[in-house]
Length: 368
Picture 1: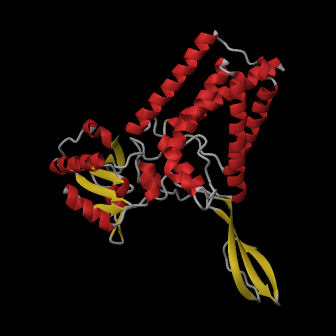
Picture 2: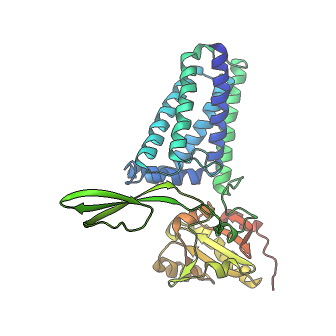
Picture 3: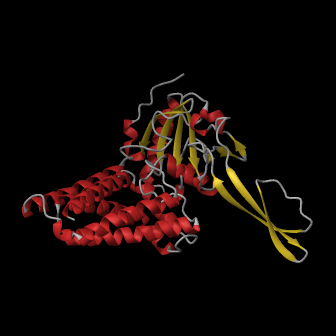
């Protein structure tokens, strides 16, 4: 039993630290996932949506600390009880998401490792088994160091997590796992290869045949049935290949400029997914970047999901020298974890990407 507890201790501790650090690297991204869970369509806890960011930070810091506490043997009973309660909650959450198909990605490992809902649930069941072993053998979990050293290490871990979380909030994630990272070509990431696997979808057609409803399943074609059509439902058997970027576009007045802009030289994208939520200092920062970029020969594009009224209002207030184009809010949130944020593109390749706090780090060389 002692050896089994030691093995479980190492496995659970390391997994919690890795999972927590991945999410702590991008707490804003995890907060978007929590907002999805809190929405009316999922758990209907909409009153928690305004607090999603602070909840995400507290949860991921606690997750990392529990992993550290377990490995160093700090307060074993508190640690094991906390692990058990946390895994029970997340097991319920992943089962609910999988069974009712509410959230397609739990965000357990951020954007680093994508898990399907059922994979997430299976992962939590395995973790639950290991944590139950720890719960049964908690008497075998002893501190690795002295009480004083263990307490100091626990405190340093807490300080380090807070510092790291603050840093990525004020700047950008240290490691960018998204397909919009520096060096990525956005246009290439939008292309679906000709030989890519197609989605496998079942279409369930309901017809009223002689006063009785019957269901006919096809792969998309309309069935030949002597009856009155009632409804059609679909079930995705295999989603097939999905391009890394599949929901991004640049539009204005109903016209799509995506391909044109992503093939231009020296483009500055000033991105604010919601202009009403953008900070004043951030708006002033992108105004200054826009002025400097225009002066140095760049094509400057604003991207937002906000309406024209707020666009025009802020354009007059801040004297923006660029026009805003429309893009999907979720896509813009994915591109840069800053509202606003800045990307520099050259023929669709991201050459620079910064939080508005870091506009002084941009290298806007003069171009032809």
